[in-house]
Image (tube, rainbow, N blue to C red; front, side):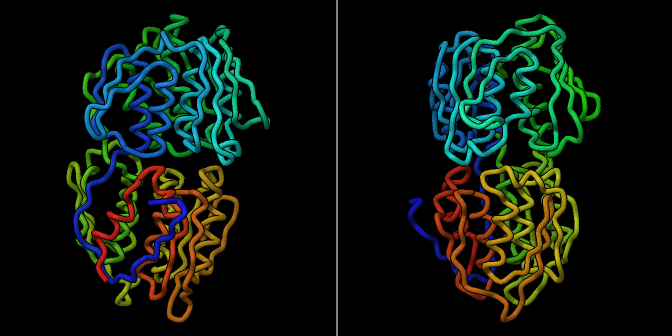
Length: 440
């Protein structure tokens, strides 16, 4: 779908069917980098085909670790971090997972690297991560604004102690980056590496993904709560041979919501009770709003209400600190609730692909909702009767804004999504899949 296009949402009354999720972005990019750092050859199956994974694949290629595509969504990577090209310039677009994780991994690679992105990436903070790395002996410089990309990385001089401290209240990706790179430090120093979190750690389930995947690649991290993590001196990544990427639980939220407001049943294949992803908790959000959810090991089935026939979801007031990405879907569902819905602890929205608190407030108001907002919260009042407004939805080059506001298809007005092609960041065929599930 071309980025210059618009997409007029069909006015629908029901949703039902089966969807097979694309691979998880979070898991795909972690797996690609872990395979590149591991000894041996890894076959990765189910890798997400999207802008963000394309960025990681391109970066690995530029660093001298090409990925061989064996089939759609299947790649083979032979690890070789110790023999990277000594210099490279990487353009990471707006891929936060790639920018943060590569910054930490390349800090200990002994070469000269420059990392940059689009304008919005240069507005997304990275100072807490860079400060933690530099205190440990890395040599990372800001090329423009202090605390933000683009960055220049020079060879490091490791310091004694090998204890890194990082703030946990801005982005869990900073801690993920330090954890994934820590075995590289252990290999060079032959000493254990410790990482301490300063303050409260947000998005803890994403750290759980990181720890589980590091274990899959041979490195077991000891932790004391969510405040201190220890990587053993002998830590070294080893290929598991074959690694299967789960479906994307964040993307599952849109289809769980469709089943909750469009009656269903909708079966979501690719995540289930065996999933390691924290965003699976969104299934409980739709359950508290009135839907029925059945759990299977690798799938979910949701049956819900019929908002197009006047049914109303149950309102909520809760923290979404652990599932900030899926929380956007809850905000879009709130227009169909029986009272005001409050999303708390979502301050991380402000440093994502766009300022998502401002964006969701503006676009939900555009379709007729009354929306209040604060530094880390959003309150959405339901839309009823004559309050609905036809609208052209701005998407801010943010895939999640476009996808969650597709739920406005159940409104009795015409809603147009501008720049629908922005969904290519994580789900290039989202609107085609959406059309297969909704019924007018």
